[in-house]
Length: 205
Image 1 (cartoon, rainbow, N blue to C red):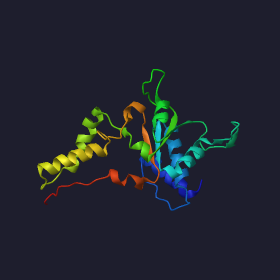
Image 2: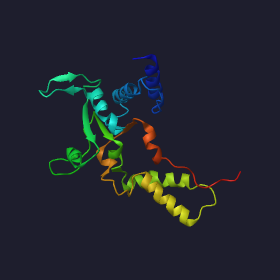
Image 3: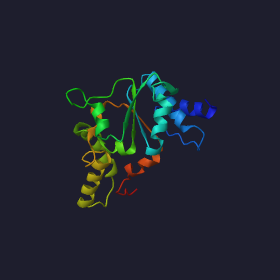
Image 4: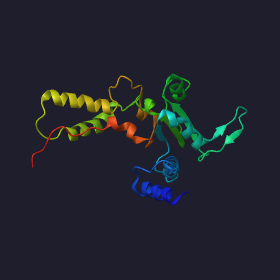
């Protein structure tokens, strides 16, 4: 490990979350992988989810779990070979089938396993009604502060918040609670910029 990676890992471990904004080639991916390992070994999580762009997906799979040749022989050793890696890619039907039991019911991923999906796959995840009631409405209240919003604007904001949280999105296919994910790492987090929004009203001092 480089000192800068060690520093980033220490920051994430102490704070429980954070943003690693190293320049190209400094080692964001390795720092992210080691932060997952630290979180799992410390008991912070047991079913982490990594969300990555399409173009880096195979690299993450290889760096974490390694790579085997056609004969099943290890061609490249991964950083965390002790953990099962759930290859969920874009959560297409064949990947969703990996999450079903023998009766066809969606079940959570195994404990002490690492799941990787693309941003396309993340758009197919949604929160259930209970989580929406607990978190979504509070999120809406925060964004609905201030004055100057019409009833129409408030309704539009309410719908946008529901969409932002994946609740009611037409592409959503799975409820995240059913899968058991308890930690998230975003590679190239700027890909999530459309998730964020801002308070629409304005408060007078």
